[in-house]
Every structure is written in structure tokens, then in C-alpha cells.
Length: 258
Image (cartoon, rainbow, N blue to C red; front, top):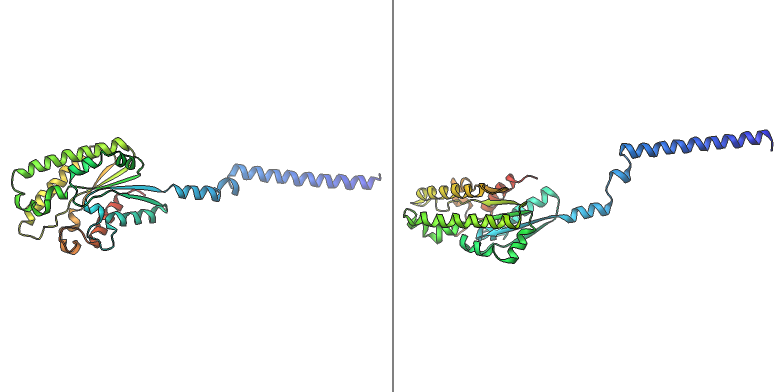
């Protein structure tokens, strides 16, 4: 073999060696600086799996939980779920366990059912509205709100509320619980101002009960309806209308951490 051939082969080998070293250096650099596409970005399947995780919302309580009075049928629960979807970009599984006319003693019984406990156990968010039927009792509360009986009724209500929160925390210690306070639908009637005093006391006392438990947030609504109550009430002058429920949903959403 001639000297020229040997020189040519040696040159090609040296060039290939340099290219290999350069490639190796680039690959090592990509690995350690984290800019490699395969390392820094999740795969399509991983992204889809993350999106499928979603959130689970369980709603408990009375007709406000059911959304009675909202022509769209959503109520504050439905509006809030839409807000959660928009903010988190995740799917939301909603289980609405509200019952029209339900009082705190009835919710106390309901929450002890095995299936209800199972639903609470898997929840990320729990929503609760209760107490309106205990206090107002279809308008009877306007008649006897000054009687001593109202004190006894509130005592039973607070005892039920404490039991309900205890059961929720027994089944699920990590879910965020939002407990929606009472408003006064009768504020513009003759005895409305006196009734407002009772409602504010119930709200204060029930907020104190909820404060004992971790991650249970009291959501005030009294002020939302105080100035223009009839603008936010359904035709029955008791339940919120669509605008009223939206006010409640926005108040709950404002207390959430996204």
C-alpha cells in the first residue's frame, strides 16, 4: 500500500473520530442541562394520563345544593363546577347528594349511610348547605323567632352540624370542605330586621363550629343578599334565582386556591 493511501485512510479515521467525539459531547451536554426533548417533556400518553386524573366534588345538603329556583338547573354547585373546570383545565366528577327540604337532623342520618361515606372518602372537594330549613321552617321561623324555642332549635342544629363535620373528617381528612352560610330571604318584610339578627347569630355560631375542624371553610352569603334581596330570589321569594346562585358560586370560588 502506498504512503498516500495510508495518509488518506489515517485522515478519514481521524475525521470520523472527531465527529464521534463531538456527537458524544453534544449528547452528554443535552443530558446534564436538561434540554433534551425526550427528558424534559412528558410523552403524549403521560399528558393524557395526567388529564384523566381530574377532580371529584361531592355536594351535601338541602334545596340550595339541588339548585332549586335556578331556571338553568345548575344552582351554585353547577356554576362552581364549571368554574373549577375552567381554572384547573381538568375533568370534574360531581356527585350531588342534596335533598329538597332537608334539615340538619336528616343530613346527620344521611351522612351515616355506607354509600354516602364512600362518596365522601374519594372527594377532593365537599360542598355543604344546611340550616335554612332548621331556622325558617317554611316561614314558621318568622312567627316564633323571639321565643325561647329558637334557642333550643339552634342548639340541636349546632350539635347536628358538629356531628356532620366529624363524619366528613372521619371519612376524608384531606378534602377541602366549603360550608355555605345562611342569608335572610325575608329581610324586606316587617320582621325582616329582627330575623336578620337571628340569621347573623346562627351564622356566627355555625362558623365557630366549622372553625374547629381543619380545612372546613365557612362561606358567608348574608351580605350578598342584604341590600337587594328580591333581585336575587326566585319567584317563591325563598330560594335564590340564577343570579343569586351565581353570587354564591363566585364567593365559594374566591375562597378556593387554584
